[in-house]
Image (cartoon, protein in one colour):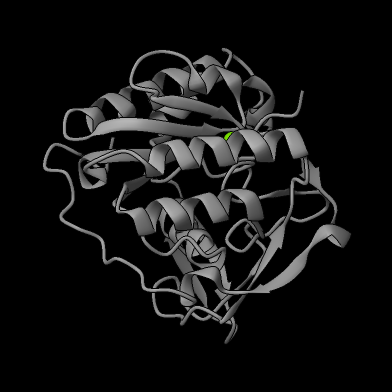
Length: 250
Ligand SMILES: [Mg+2]
């Protein structure tokens, strides 16, 4: 079973800047296209949309393989296509007024060197790259992005293992446990009503609301479509105050 792709490419031509770029009026998407999944997702979104006081409720999205597609032969992790069905659900829930959070096992505090479009080197964190990836994929508005600290991620290493092959040695139960801890943090402020993830183990435990398992798919490049930016078609809500108890560093 293919797990989340967590290796971030260093040799990339970094787009204008992590924070400064203007979102394009078009974005790239791929579609899961599974009727059963689409029906389940639509039922969940309709059910959520009927809830009262959405501003007191949170929905949580995983990133790789959930909000943003995993692509075959495609190494640029700061700019990959959105998964259309999930982007659509995100836009509806955001417009309804739910608090949107992203929780990812990407190691946010890890620094890598990237090359800017002007050929200069700069050091950025994976957290910054991930913010960029969300923006490029159309996920511009959210309360908080939680990336896994590298020390927690590396706790899964087998003793004596080759660190260059960390994707083979990581203990994925650490990710599920860490994600549950982040959910508990969010749940101290908001009622979690749904979580979306492509790994079943990340949907277990407490504070899940309605768990939605996204089909685990690695898309090929010929599946990419360009669509007009869904977020630009309607009015967007600005993010409200961030939860007081959240520590983005952990
Ligand atoms: Mg995932």
